[in-house]
Length: 329
Image 1 (tube, one colour):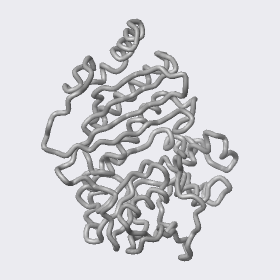
Image 2: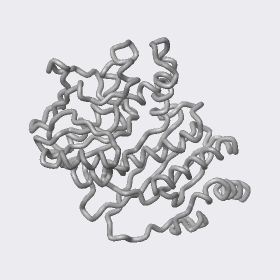
Image 3: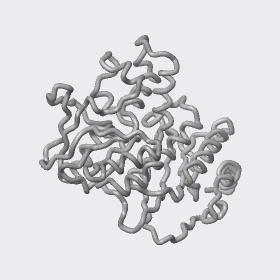
Image 4: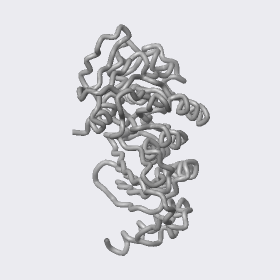
């Protein structure tokens, strides 16, 4: 890197991201590395990238991209029962523009403060290709208490937070695939916002840690991610499709050409949490969820066999899903 490029990168970091580096271990972003203080806890590490044309549209507002990039990682920490500790950012830009970077940095700083997850460092690079934002986030849990995917047991309830399928519908609206189907403007805006700005369930992280036998965040679609959890735990599950929680706008579209149940449970980008809860912990888990003000729904049970999870319609008949989740490859 020549002196001019290095100076430009240093100026970019100093202007937009150094003000966000409030943790002492970030050293004001003037060093090559950051320092996370020891606390006696286990350190949970997760990383996710979002890429233009894959995870977001070219005309999505920069403030929503900042929030989405951080929140998809916070969602992983929530599912592990971890408290956020900080993150590092890699930003690949085609050009440097104050019009884009200022709202991006402002929103990133607001979310970092709101979720208690300060920026610790990162890297900025130029690219001739699509815009890419990659975040690696760190969280803390007491020793041995991280909630893994592989602990579900037969008889556990399958629970999911929030509502499912909104983001998939929001993306369809943005792509012009849902039009003239009776949705009012607030409903359309709600679905679009659910796609652009996930709502990670970090308020429920401690309850997940204390109650769940297994958990993961729902990023690629409820059906596919549940199948991954079951495979890791060497169990299966029976899911009642009628119990899968849907928002009012999603209900309004259900059954129309643009939205069937398969679309909702396999569309991805929900960033909710699916978890297995032992029956004797269910009541206290629900009480903790109410206290955290997070909606939780029971949608089925873990079963002992190793077959793929079954999804049943309202009459109890199995529903054959043509696809379970979004796949990059």
